[in-house]
Amino acid sequence: MPEATDPLTDLFTYPLFQAVFGRRSRRFGLGMELPSGPLAFESDAEPHPLTDLERSVLLAAGTGVSGWHYGIPFGPNRPGQHADFAVRLTGRTAPTAAGIGTPVLFHTDDTGTYLTNTREVEPSRLREATRLEDDAERIIAVCRAHTEKLSQSRVDIPSKPGHVLEPNHWWTNTPGSTLFMPVGDASEEMLALLCLFVENGYLIVDDEVGEPAGDLDSYIDSGLLNPEKAFPLSLLERATYEQNCAEVAFMAHNIVLTMQAMGLGGLYFAGINELSLFGAPTADDVEGLGFRFVENEDWTLPNPVGLDGRYEGLCPPYYPDMRAAVDELMERKFGPGGAYDPATPGPWKDSETVKESVAPYDDELVECLSEIAQYVYDKHGRFPGTVPTMVLPGCVQAHHIDTDYYDAHFKADAYLDTHAEHMRRWHEENDPS
View 1 (cartoon, one colour):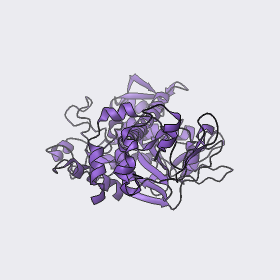
View 2: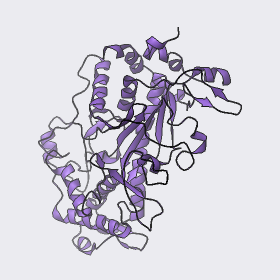
View 3: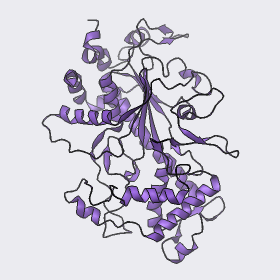
């Protein structure tokens, strides 16, 4: 990437705290028009889309593979083993609960709609090169290699009520902008969290009825589950959703901080209906990202369960039942190529020995997990039962700001030096000077 050297060098040396304290939502981009009011303004410029390099840098900030993560080293339920809570050991730029690692990153712009999925990437060794730029260019290259084009067009979200909140109509998903959509999988998240709770003896209780979540007597009798460690099912579902929301928000905030260092405008926001983005069945026939939905007459809203063949939930209709979904999770953790397969590498000096210490779950534990998961699915017709299977609480829009707007209406320092210098540093051929 010979043309990338100078702007990347500037980016890598940009102070973190300048990005943190310089972060603002800068909505007005080149080619936009704010139609009325005291800040009315029409840009004299044409929309200026992000370049491939600019997009790639932001993808790397959100979901770049930065090496291995180190797992959770100890669990008192298995004191002689390394803890087995992670599903993936791929270290990325944003953290995930217990190393479960469900999120992926979608984006859309004038050239089409894309999915970047770095969840299963086996990290190469980083920081062995002599320059920081070499390290970052590898991360960018991995994101590019694991980005798939889903369609030739921008996601079709109408700027009207029901799809986009009214104050966002004039600037959201407009020509020249790039919209990043981080998505988490609550079905895998909840199953993996359920593993952690059950192997530590927690009795999952359906607090709506005050009874165990399934036929769990035999597991209480055997000592696998401790009735004195009752844990509400509603709280487990809420924790699942909250942790997924936090994970994708970390991804988004990484992107936003990088935008400050690059001198790009935009913001993290929640003003688009996530069901529209997923492509829920509506009267407007919005395709969105093309996710599959499951509907039920007892539900207020349809439930997004996955993108066929690319990002599928650990639940029906992708599996015949939750028992099969649990079996798949066991493969991801302990099967060939899984997180704890001794034949696969890891972050430790003797990764094989560390992984050999981790015993796969016995039949009783797997059966207990399956019983609870199937109970949730049978009761609600979905998994999780009370929160969406696919989680998309907010998006990031990135665009080139129109500094004329900020000069016309705002006091000094409405934008950073990086914004003022962006065209010279990143688009030297378009610099008006």
